[in-house]
Length: 166
Image (tube, rainbow, N blue to C red; front, side):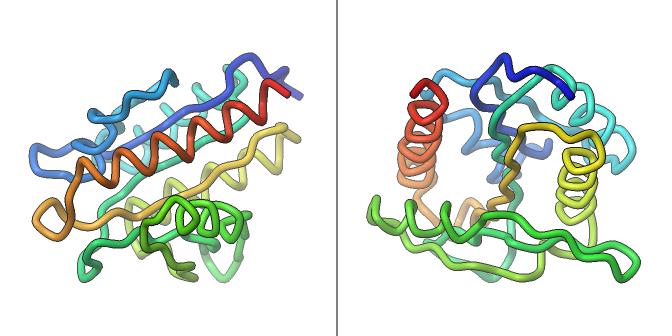
């Protein structure tokens, strides 16, 4: 079991117009931020290395089509019929209390986002890490005010960091 050294890690996917990357870059909260390549194996390896460093919370961001001015908190990651769950309800309720639209989704997608989420949740479970991982889908850049999304995520991450210090 890895000892917790750091409070929060935020991940996002690379891409010039990727809203998750842009929003991650706008975050002001003091936490580690990494941009993952759009490569399933490489992004999982980077996440594994970070998880082994000892983070209490991981907030992974991805962009989701067809949502506008809301965040999708993913509670499920799936692979080959196996389903892993997270505590997305808690995150969703906090985001709503901060005044931003959020809903629970039971489908993290079929490609990079789901792959990373499943890998992370499974790695945490198999290695008995004291880490909670959350996956948040944000709208495409033209479907939201990215400054507003970054502001609510800063509040969310700060709240979780404060909890870690208590």
